[in-house]
Length: 267
Ligand SMILES: [Zn+2]
Image (tube, rainbow, N blue to C red; front, side, top):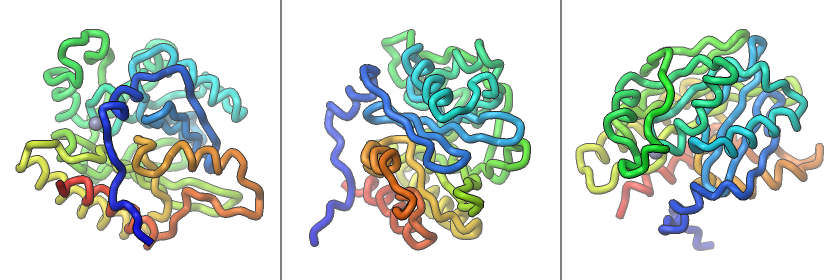
């Protein structure tokens, strides 16, 4: 069987990141909801203290509304949103944070390096509506944790895609069984930047090593192209009790999944 080693990006992939005509969502663990448009995903993690939103798709009110309706649809309360954690300073991840801050007073988290990068190097320099539009309350970095009530998010520094890109590892529950999930923050190397690509490759190794020590068995992705995210959501929506959770890959499966990030650095 001849399987592709990596997904194919086209100009359309980039364009679809700004298509807000359609969203989908699914509660994929007892305490984790994924919300996606065609290309980009956001996660909402339930803790004893409130809801933590991880990455916010795009600075658009339509995106914010979609996240809020998804939270209501799974029976959670949007008023409980209290933290907003961002992987890196690109517009398709800093996303709709402005509304999370204005309306929910969400405490915001990002690396200091990427807060500066976001301000000084906007993803779309010619489009002011995509520039930095809210403040970061807490700077976080490699080896630190974000306390969230009864649980913690472990911060893994994975620079390369952006200079201060972060990845997150955190526990999720399914019917009383705990799994460990990991979200690789920036899934492509900085094209045409040799130094940055080397840093990116080192970061993948560091991420896999960290995930191994924490027994990560769940791979999350903030872009649907890497994990057939839309199909995984559709499967999860229609999943019956006798069917496996498609997000649980096992420890070996997780490591195999991470091969895509290395493959992306090869021309
Ligand atoms: Zn990015």
